[in-house]
Image (tube, rainbow, N blue to C red; front, side, top):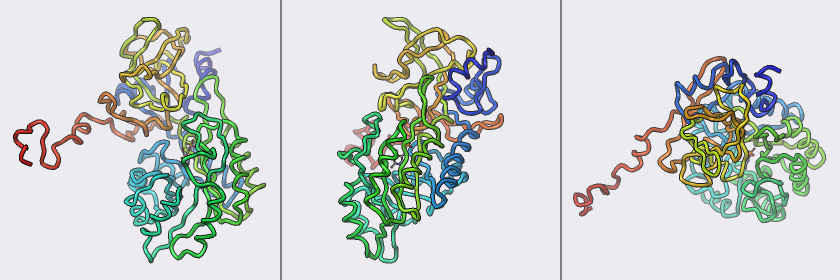
Length: 440
Ligand SMILES: Cc1ncc(COP(=O)(O)O)c(C=O)c1O
């Protein structure tokens, strides 16, 4: 067995499609990760652009083949980067946003507002007014309070297309923080109430309810749960649009397997054929499964030490990988320039934020790590960058896209100046010189 095959045999299914090992070095998009790190620093998010585009196309083509009257929305919360909005739009996806920040990023990427769907359980007046002003295609309504706001905000000259979010009463069998379809969910409204609202709004002059939406959660590995959610929509028949949400899970580590896009679409569309009107438009909103595997994060080892356990601390952590403490996801790791060495050492791979919970990988298997080794965590393309924060003054990592031996910056690294900018004296009061501004 060649060295390349031994790493790829073990972790190939969680690495981006163009990953390879040459002379012990992990390469993505034709470039060694250690070269990328030398140029852009660590922590660094790296996306394999070819893999990203291919996954998007497999969703768009897969839906088109199975249900021609359909659209695939990229759930942009998974990776709200201007570069990824632009790539998703170019690959034929519409865009799901869940807040005005994501709206502005999508617009900045050149996404046509007619391709934007606005989600969220607590949209403010400002956000709704801005969405209406720019002309988003669809607003997905989560509550009756939101309908009241829309009554007030949609001008007489406009008719706003709406979907109503339904709580299907389906347990997605995923981590509690990602389970959104149970009867006690905060997201959406009970089916009977949705039915009544559709009747009440039937002849509304400005609010045009065209369909319903359901989303049962994220990191779902059993396609049967999606079919159940579709079945729950059957009693709400006769609508033009059914948005079946996102949620397909991905394999995060060596021993995890996930359904393929084709397996997922087969299950979903079989359920739709059984339960939904044949002439309806179907929408889906994959986020995680579109981008997760195309991305990896590279860190530098800062400390190796033995206490009760062997700890390896890197220069990132829960400030850039919050999914670990939030959802309990289990990652694997690779040493970028020692990818052909046997992973014979068990270590606690920890971050640098001041929490015992800042444990990136519990019992990671690596070739005995040394200070300055580059650690690569695969499958970080979803919900990593989007949840970055400044805990302990951490600076948001840079993001690069790699393709055919070329790297392009997708987001620059946050700098100290960015941090300080938010704290510049505002409103005339300077906390550093109170005596000078006490009269203000
Ligand atoms: C309404 C909605 N649609 C789609 C998604 C995307 O889910 P996933 O990233 O699991 O595909 C989410 C994320 O939770 C969501 O809240």
